[in-house]
Image (tube, rainbow, N blue to C red):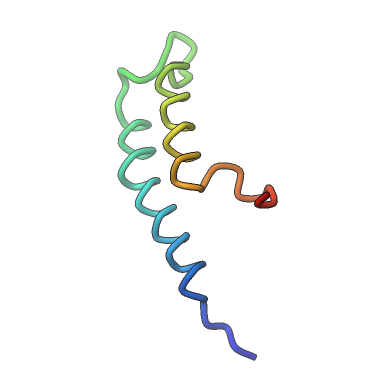
Length: 65
């Protein structure tokens, strides 16, 4: 059995890792991003969703059409 990760999957994994480390974690660490109910403010949340969609990492469980 070959357990080698394909170059396509590895590139996807690196993209996801970089997005989480560079975008999501700093956003979560910044107290000013939270609203009165301790949720990430809707405008910032939508911006993160848009970036994830642009990178192709939004809804990874969904089939590519």
